[in-house]
Amino acid sequence: MSVPVSVEPTNAAKARDVPLDQLIARITQERGSFADLDERQLEKDEEVEPTEDESKSATDAGNDEPTFYEKRAQLSGAVGAALNEAALNLDLVSLLVSGTRLEAGVSTMSPALRAQIAPGSLNAAAVQTPVPGLPNSAGYGWKIMAYDQASVYLEAASKRLRGEVELEQQFWTDMLTTVKSGEVVNRNLQIRYGFRDAGSVYHDKGDGRFVRQHEGHAKLVPNTERLSRRVAVSVFANNTGSTSAIESEDEEEFRLVGRACVEHSDILGPDVLQSVSFERYKLFEEELMHNLIQETRNTLAAKQVRITDTGKLVCTIFGGKIEIEMEDINTTNSMANMSNLNTRDPKNPAFSVCYALHFLQLEAYERRLHQWQSEPKPLNSAEKRASQEMPPLLGPVLARIQCASLLSRTLKLLEIMKLEVVSTENISESNSEYLCGPIRNRIILNCDPQISITLGSTIDSGVAEFKAEKKGVSTAAINDLVELEAWLRWASS
Image 1: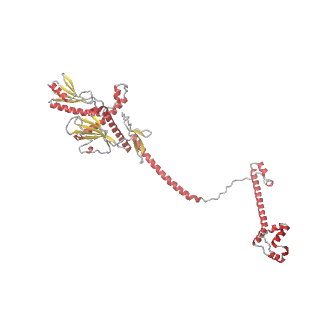
Image 2: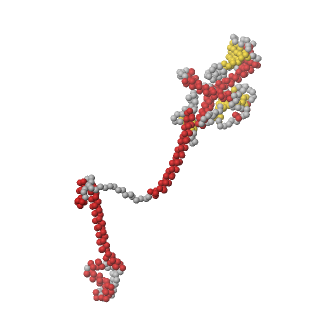
Image 3: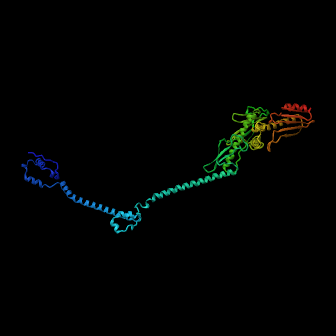
């Protein structure tokens, strides 16, 4: 007969609580019928030792109860100690409070403390306990590195600032030298190096500003950039020996006899004064060429003066021509380096023409400046209109050359006619301290009655070239040498 056996472990505590009817059913299920139970077998089952888990559970169950009571006793003692300390601290606080607020302190003190210690008898002082931390030497390393790096930065900054101070000192030294030299510099470091205050009416006033260069020196920066050019004058003679005033188109018929230009002269002083002087020189040369071109367009177009496509002025004169152009200052002209040409030789015909144009430009400044300083004329007057016009520059020079050529040809005619010349004199009126008016030459002949010939200036278009006068007889206006020759034959007969 088979007996079913449950493998589920039996809990002894729960087994004691099982009712008897359920317990009998479980025993019957595990052991079978009570009739089959053997007393010996039951004794053997009882003698079997309990397992390791059962023994361990029994041991833990035996030890849990005393450990619990011990822990509870320890917790109770700790809570009691905490309560005692809290009460003691409260009494101490109350005793301290009673020193300032007696009623509040006494009301919160315990009766035992109030009976043993008088209220207000306790005092206290704050004591700061040092907080443990890292030693001070732990941060010395990075601090020393930071100090070293900061010292390097400060040293570099001090050197840079010292250099900036030296550069600023150099810049303001140049500015002080510029002001002491007579230049007018405003607070914005602007300078006017042009000739507007001297009487110029050129559109470029010649303004600029000063800036500091990398090396500290002051540098002039013009408001208007211009090329480094100057006025050059070249004089050509006719190789054929012709004295015709009509220009030939063949350039081989002319040979260069003179070339000149006014060179810039360096002045003593720093570079900033040199730059101001050089910019003023370029502006003067540019304005001079501009005035010559304007004069040619307005008044000299009918006097065999023309402007080429390259901006060159070509003036046809007796036996040659004059060319006026702008040349680069930095470019060496091959014609100016010829061995037989000296640009600074006063005997050079181009030298006289070039310097005469520059002096006339200065005279125009002075004349206009005097006009500005004088009492203004009525707007509709002829003097007012004349004062607004640019004084002639090239016209007087060409007139002087033509007058000299005409005088030479007239004397040659008188020599051919075998008429004795008593005297030759110049007739002119002074316009200023340095310049004279239109030149007239008077020739007096040794005749009876006396004959005088006055050569009029070609600068006055309304005046005849010759004015012949026979004393006490007649006066004639003659236009050319052929007519003069006929009149002289009549007057000397």
